[in-house]
Amino acid sequence: MISKQQLRQAFRTNLERDTDISAYQARSRDLCSRLLGFLSVRPGLWAGFMPVGFEPDISPIYSKTENIQWAFPRVDGETLSFFVPSGPLVMNQWNIPEPDPERSRHVELGELRGLLVPGLAFDLQCNRLGRGRGYYDRALGSAERNKNTNSRARVGIAFERQIASTSLPTDSHDQAMDWVITESREIKRNQT
Image (tube, rainbow, N blue to C red; front, side, top):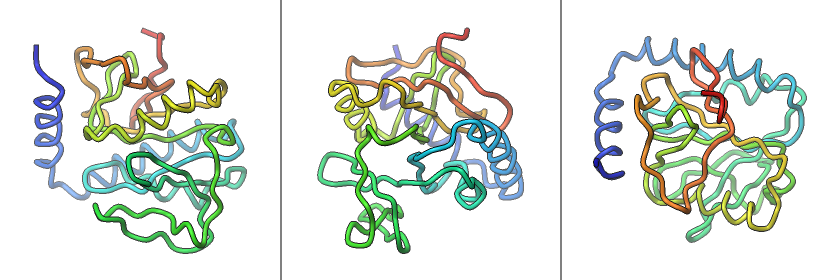
């Protein structure tokens, strides 16, 4: 059986080979359109993310969702904290934009209507293969143990080419998504 690390490398290599910027932008626009439709009936406070590298560029949706307030993750040691920014985002040590806690309002996961979650790959059961540091798995697992996510939607965001053709390996701490949204479909957990 192939390991998670081997899968990460295979998906990363495949994604990094795609240097067609106009195709990337078109797929990102299509994904944003689908995501806006999904979010239009789910107003409230949501956690988003700022895309880095190969991740779909969903940043246009943040200014197009009138009934949604956005929080963004910030790495604090080994955990993620979420903040509603009131100023520009700042780059962390991995060159990922995140809120400045001095100019932002901290929010608990239990306050969120849902979270948009990036990943290297997802499967048809909405399992997620992340970058390997476990930040989202720890945050979502901790909130679940504290019963703070009962009605929180976990939405994986990926391009269609990031959907694995077979089930991804999972460990007991891995957190599945409720949906995965790509540029061409919405995959709901337990739908297949």
